[in-house]
Image (cartoon, rainbow, N blue to C red; front, side, top):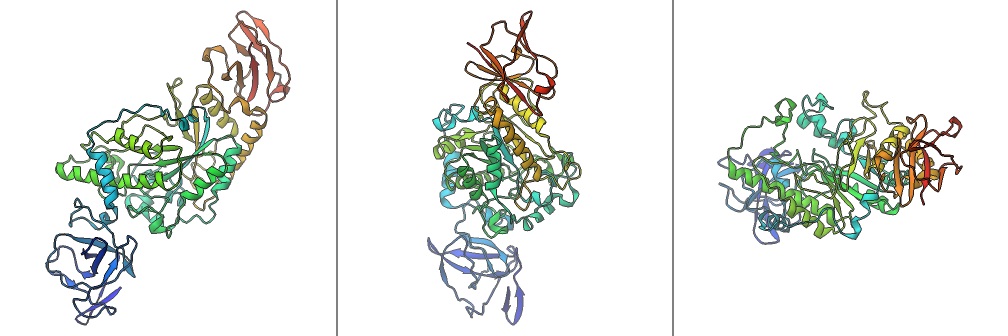
Length: 550
């Protein structure tokens, strides 16, 4: 925007510093100022709309107001005046609040990360609490008891990274061994935000396919480590509010889950690399400098920065937990800050449960406990205790992988997906299967091939995986077992060749091939009972033998 001062044109550019002064609780006197914050003399801008030095105008405050008004005179920076920035060529964004902890020397990028008084008070209460809530884990609320038998869930990493088909967030870390892309190193990564615009987004199609394939819950990345939010959050400046005209990508997803009877899950990364000064472990976005961040020198300032970040994070969480109805799963993914040992996990989890009493939360808010364990990618050596879930991507890296030549042909076949699912269910866990949607909002076609296969298999053998318990004893058979009361389901996978052994002498009431209903004879061999499937009886995927006991 052009302005004339003394006959000379000045152009306010995006990012230039300007000031306004709060004069009443709900009103502002706003003015534009040309020049750098630290300049000794600031030249008032004279607007054609409000001619004459000293002209002012009041307007009702609104975080989204676009206002262009002249300023009277600024020779110095008075206390209580706020610094903001030009966000477009036709105006500026006026924030309605400035916490006293945000001083006037902050950088331009910090302004959008301020929080409103109510959010600051909410965060302050959690930070200052002297009580440590003693929460029971897992959550005993009746609405949380679906989780241990959920069985199968859909995990989706989706965001600006999808545009380039690169690893979410980690692609910007120089020399990161699992997906670094030089073209998007460091801050260059955020250029993708301008291109992310899913015109063919149809989450109902995603969730309906997942439901038919036996998935009972879904988890979508609302915000990954890169800090890009899929909803128009009023906190920060890296979301659909700034880059997609305020479009909300979460509400259609939530609505689709509810229409299809699928539990709603939100992945939320507390770690936010776009937050100004966030102490990322890969110092300067360089994997070679991991763990080499200089030690903290300004301890008070470091504490203040942590509290600012905490308040910002609480603000975003509050939006997620109060704007979308009942949320069933909250999936955190790490939080850390130098010198901060207490991340207020107990206080945060208690606060979350006060907003969503029946929610299930994983244990990735720092080192705090959670309702379930989350071994990632590799399975443990044996069944974990309590509620647990294993997540892994079945198509390359965690994000959209079809553009990556190393990943595009690596989609898991149905046999492999079923094998992982059966193993996890026989151990009493849930399988959270990840796939990255495309940037246009569609799913890779292989996803629908997989869900069709699974749906077909479930039509005859679904009772062996849906709402079942684990194996009564892993040593009871040479194949994996799921169970329901006095019924065992023996899972004969493609890799299981030869006779099926039951290491028990008690004779069952019956043994049948679940897919066809035909009876299967058992023969005794020592202390074992043997069942044999002929080649003609074998199917393509998992052949289930249902064994009933007296």
